[in-house]
Image (spheres, rainbow, N blue to C red):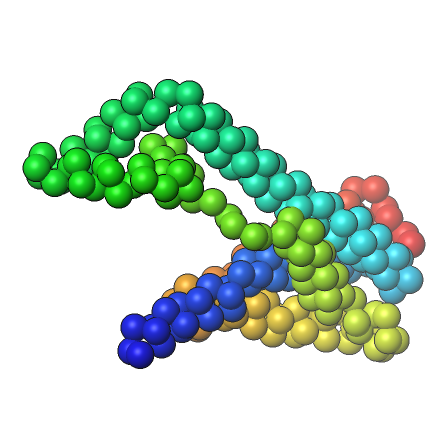
Length: 241
């Protein structure tokens, strides 16, 4: 019963963290890139309408790009894993003796006593799926992603990017006073960046304060650079919008 509970807790942890990387990745980039646009536009003293237009355009375009990139990356990895599994199955069917020799070499590298190698070899090769699983992991160093859905991961990234990335724009969209809109955006961005960073602790186990401050620091650096660039562009080219 105790072992069953440990196994169930392990599966629960894996399921909980299944999309966390996508959510953190998407939310982090959404907040930082959108606020960088807001900061650059504020540094150039652009009007709230222009800030909203630039921010929303960036939000939609980058959100689609992020989601599709994550989808294609995972799909490519899964396709590669499937092709390698097919190739390994073919080799086991056509060249079983050669594949058995490879299993023995792996067992030797594990320092399994020679007298026990035959029994372990027989156990591994008695089931084709087990044999292929063994070769995928131990020979090819491929940890298969199982039933992961590229569409689901891509969609999670997109939604996180859009949802979190909209936060820096809210003061401008909902008509906050011009003089305080950027200040409110800074506060909303800082809080959300810290929260997204702290969220990583659900899987990593790292301290929430450190994780939150790390992500907040990245956002401050990016936004500061954008604000300075916006001011320089305004002074050099005399932007008046």
